[in-house]
Length: 167
Image 1 (tube, rainbow, N blue to C red):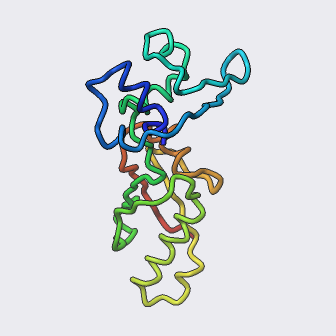
Image 2 (tube, rainbow, N blue to C red; image 1 turned 30 degrees about the vertical axis):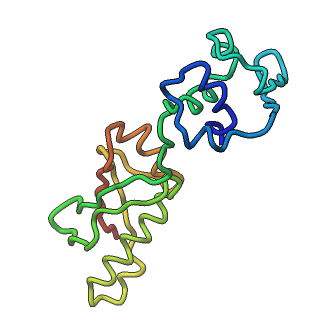
């Protein structure tokens, strides 16, 4: 939408970045309203002349999107791998998982418990207490994958999480 709204500005400021499809759908005279450091600002798109001062005046994210140089949106999901913490813990199937970053450790424990229960004839497996660790840090139920990634794992995904059942 920003590309379409600012197509005429891009055509003046950076003609090499203008696509014919964008120009074909350029809107009728439009006013953009955004908040800046100085309060609410209104800009009439048809009044823009395509100079460097306007680029500095317009919010950076708007200019980046208009010029097609904005970074892609961050994925709401993150991948993690589940591995047994020791030889006594059984392997679970589907150990590589992609899940929303807001997924909590409690849900990961439920997932591990369910996988262990499915792979076991033991009917008591559903009441197993599960401990999870990442980078030698015990994961609390209140942690999310986003928190683990930012403050514990601190590397590129997949996050390595080890599990064990405790009595």
